[in-house]
Structure formats: structure tokens, C-alpha cells
Image (cartoon, rainbow, N blue to C red; front, side, top):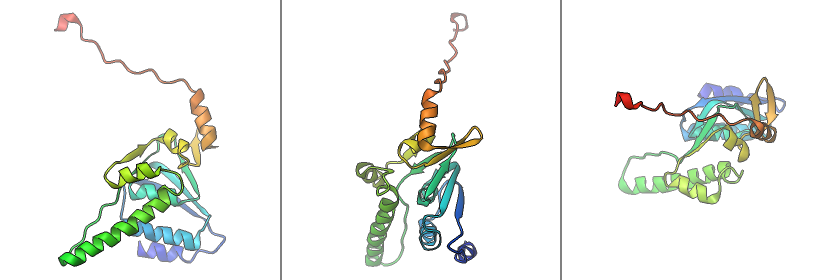
Length: 182
């Protein structure tokens, strides 16, 4: 990954960054490196595509981009970070407290300041609540800005109008056992 970051640092102010995301998660430190790079070299020139799933750090990477494109079956999950530390007791305590403050601020800036989760939802997330979202929810919350469907790109608002007009699929009924088989 180090060589990828170094290559991206060579970008000019005319370059754009496109991220194709299909991720079950990753390391927050590497995600923060991506964020720093995007702020320094690709400010307001980023597009992320949620090609299936974006969970954990994959969700945050998706949210970092200016333009955020999903597909009808894309889904995303926010949850709190995982962290570990080792060393002498006092050092571990200090390290954990410092990391908690830093990561909570980072998550807050990416998720709450942009309006993707409320303060109340964010507090619940920090104590263990996972937030799973499908394409419709991603559009409603403004997390997705665009949706690719039926061979074209819709704005999130256009897509919500489109799916509202569609017929709801009928629920599949469970087969009923006949009295003879009992």
C-alpha cells in the first residue's frame, strides 16, 4: 500500500481519484492515510463507487469522496472501531484514551458533520450499534449522491422518485403443509 500512496502523491491538480469499493473493512490507520492524501492531492476531485458492499473502513472510504455512486444492491455498514494496545499499564491506558479521542473525532467528521448519522445514532454506534443501509437508505441520508441503474446514472433524488413509482414485490408465502402429510 505504501507504493500506491507514493504513486498517488505524484498527482497534479488536474487529476481525479476514483475509488471502486467492495470491502468488508480494513485498518483505520490506512483509511486515515487515504483521507490525508485525498485532502492534499485530490480535494473536491474524488469519486467513489460502492460496487456491492462497504463495511467498516470501506464505508468511511466511500464517504470520503465528493461524488458517491452506488448500485441498486449496494449496501453499507457503519460501526465503531476496533483497537488494541500492549505495553506497560499506564502506557496502554494513555494510548487507548488518546486513540479513542482521535478516532471518535475522525469518525464524527466523516459521518456526523456530513449528516449521514445523527449525534444520537453516532453515540449509539460508539457503544456497539451497527448501522446497516441499503441503496434506498443511502440515498435518503445523502450518503449516496448518484445511483447507476438500467444503464444510466441517476441522482439520488431521481432514484428515490423512480423506486417509489415501482410496484412492491409480493411477499413469498411459506408453503402450507396439507393435513394429509401431518
